[in-house]
Image (cartoon, rainbow, N blue to C red; front, side, top):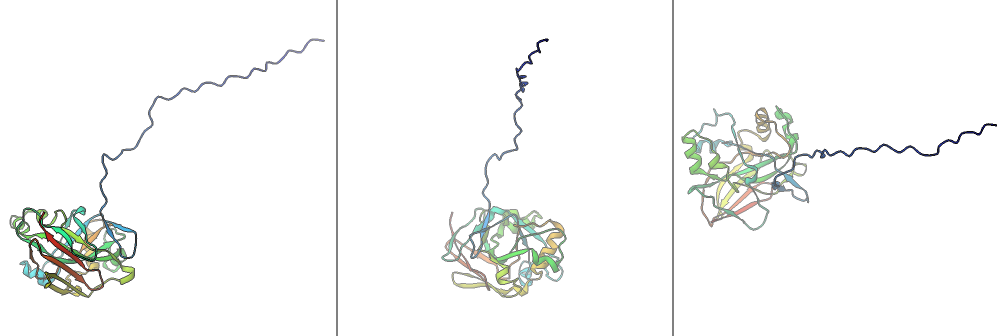
Length: 260
């Protein structure tokens, strides 16, 4: 009988895979980190991240008149402050607030601040308050001499409004706890003397109407805050003055103006 041929038991060598020399693609990295501006929330360890600051001008009739405007004819208008202009002011003893450079006529303006948890475009007033997370007391501090000078030259107000620490704001009280205030006392004292006193019901444009108008011009988003206007009797402060701001149902805000 013919001998059977032996089958080779040698295993085929696996083909070697060529190593890629192409570096793995990486996404862009930040050149440096920038701190997130946040506001505290009453009764919570969470904080509210601030995206943009919108401000309405002359939203109380008496203030519009003292600024030389006719509130019966003027539609709402808005301006912005930089996000990092926020100075967080906790309830309690007055917090130091630096008197800014380039001015000799530094004014207070107490305001209700509305903070948004959502947004959109062309939001109708009837649905606008669904976007509001809560409310706080704020100050729209103003270098009035610079603002007026720019206005007379028909230039933007940025120097008068958009500076460091120009937006002191207290802790946020969620609307789930207090609702949406449409009335209630709003006031400001300087060194214990009342300077501003009015009621939220005296706003020319309500919070809902402001959101409606803003959303026609901008896409509003979560994190936006709206400073809703100040009553009449704005005026100057100097280093050493203590300002106390009050709005019914919200934590007070108190600052002491100090030299840099």
